[in-house]
Length: 449
Image (cartoon, rainbow, N blue to C red; front, side):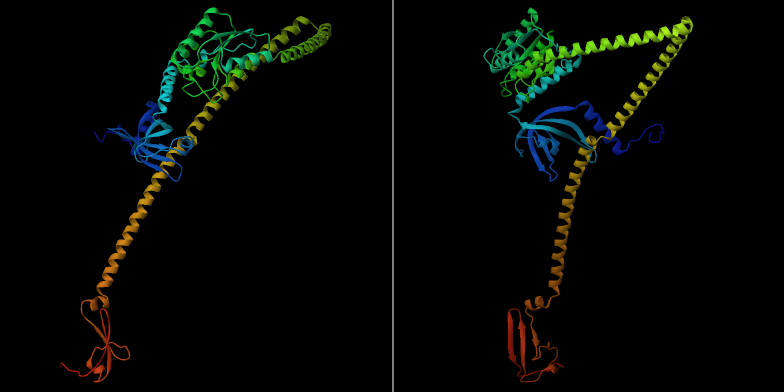
């Protein structure tokens, strides 16, 4: 079986690439709650850590482009909620998560619920563009689903009174936060749909926290907006706030005031537009009349000079031929543009740095860690070698010999005395011992030979 020429034998890099593709295409984005361990903030600005629970752990990386927006300080033992892409680090074949968002586990419960419901509704197609209705350019009656005492309704009425007081406003009062608010908002939308008395509908409220705006993230409200055939503008909170109602509505406005401006045309602008259109119509009509008269004179001239029937047939044939050639040429150019665009899109997709940078960054961090370990290992080896050489040097040192009870004798010139021939009776000598020096005088010398 190993010699089968038809069997493709994978290289290790091919296998890791295939596994990485399967993980990233099948699992895509996941939300995960766990405890941080082995946290490292690399000098490159990237974070490397593990997320674990009582039974398992997984390696993670969070690149500096994403971790700059993290509001908490990550530390070992901290419980966090993360949004991550499942991937594989090809150089080591390690399964890992690329973290895109991180927040405290307690604060992230609502956010996690938001993301889960968003994914569910998106999978059902509620956010698709094909279901969105165009917002009418001119409206006579606007419906507003909001609190009758909130700032949002006053902002909307002020904008409409300033820009176009002739627009009629019908308010469908409802709670906009707290228990039962989502049911009331959905009921108000269905009521407006059943009455069929407005040209467009504004659904929204003023700004607030995620908890304050949560009613507009409830599934009942989102489905009511989707089911309503009246064009709806979602105007929830401030410009930075994004609710699920914004995704399903036919249009999102950053504020309730902006929604009123979208639906109301300034009467002064309308008058100027009508005047400009009237003038343009007069000029166009005059130009058309002049052109037709000139054309009439040319035709009368040609008719008087030659047979009209023959000329008409000839011109018709030429016109048909030119039209066919023009259509074919346009089709060919259009197809060439499509083919060129597809080719450029494929080349751009395969060469985008966004696919390569995370891999190179992770590989660079790994090489940096390995270099540090190698330097520490080399340093330890040098220290050990130096200690061994010092020990060997100490074994042959004269001082070590003296330390064992021996001594060194020198004459007046400081020369080491190796023979009794070097001294005479009465000479002064010095004797070096372990802890000092002794000055002595020779009283006798004995030849052992």
